[in-house]
Length: 154
Ligand SMILES: [Zn+2]
Image 1 (spheres, rainbow, N blue to C red):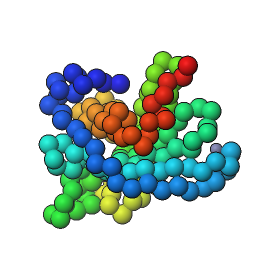
Image 2: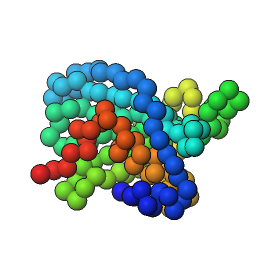
Image 3: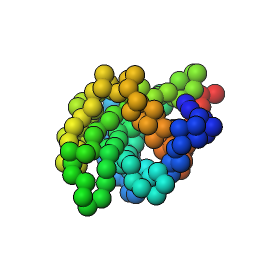
Image 4: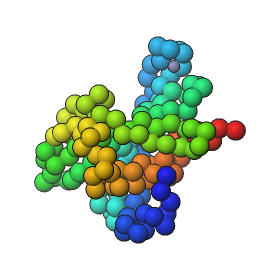
């Protein structure tokens, strides 16, 4: 997890714009309903990403999928300027952890707003990784709808 000081070093002033949410299921493993919430991440009032967080309350292990669509938004921006990014979130003994996974393995990878689904190899070690983790930290810390995911193991 990066902290606020680290984000400021990179000039990030990120905020969220929560949109809607959906409940669906039941989950095949436990019968609980799965929750999905979504919204937008803005930097200096410009939208830089859409985000979707999906998890099943009641699962013993606190885990969630964070799916992002990053890139340009607005009337002029075509899908070719937007990319799908997928992360696996887990609340570990050591604290919250995000892991980049292949976006092609997630529904967001074929979203009609997306021009390309990024693989883990296209992100890890590349400059884009810093942006992606800053976006995830912002969503994780600011979206009240996912407060349950922030609770640490006792
Ligand atoms: Zn389940």
